Amino acid sequence: MLRHKFIIFFAAATISGFFSNVVNSAGVAVKPGEEAWTTNGVFGSFDRKQLKRGWQVYNEVCAGCHSIRLIYYRNLAEMGFSPNEIKKIAGSVEVPAGPNEDGETHKDDEPIMRPGKAFDRVVSPYANKIAARVANGGALPPDLSLMTKARINGANYVHALLTGFKEAPSGFKLSDGMHYNPYYPGGQIAMAAPLSAEAVEYSDGTKATVEQMSKDVTAFLIWTAEPELEERKRLGIKVIFFLIIFTAMLFAVKRQIWSRLK
Image 1 (cartoon, rainbow, N blue to C red):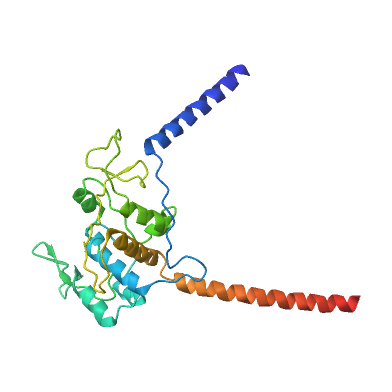
Image 2: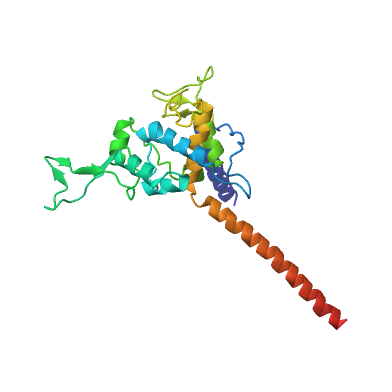
């Protein structure tokens, strides 16, 4: 019995020590602050002007490394882009044309390409994951379509990460090719600071500070993760009003029935 208890205690201590080492090696990230997103709350909604600015930041800065594979160019209409604007945006890139009349997809060892159209997905920066890793020193840039849903405290985390790059504190051992960011688990991340002042020139005249660009692209990623957010909230409000009225009617009927029994 004593031997059995010792074995259990030793196994528990070993497992506990293992997970403790894993946690310590991963490090604890700084908790991001709460931001006042326009989508917060029951009546939250998207700011279309901000979404357009966010698309511009993504397209001009983030799209060089990160994809949004769940979004089609036609979806940009939900952000307020006109059909002509979408046609121009999609037509500025090239996508594989598919088999031609001879059934060929390549010519002279190069894929046959055509201008993008509204029904195409937003193009990815790399042909596949292997090409992405080769171009980024082994690191795989994540797809951003669902990023604000995939991370705890999603939108606040993304904004804090984009604005949180700084010099590593004294005594912090930074690995080769890594960059210090206290909001990333472990404090170091392969991605360099992607935003810098005036990295884009907003078409609406808004000053492109790092803070502004970060909030705009984060708002855009809230939309890519849940384009139906406004519709869902409107439906929720209708359901709540229906339940309130229905409950009041049930209460009135209950009082009428019980008044007769008395």
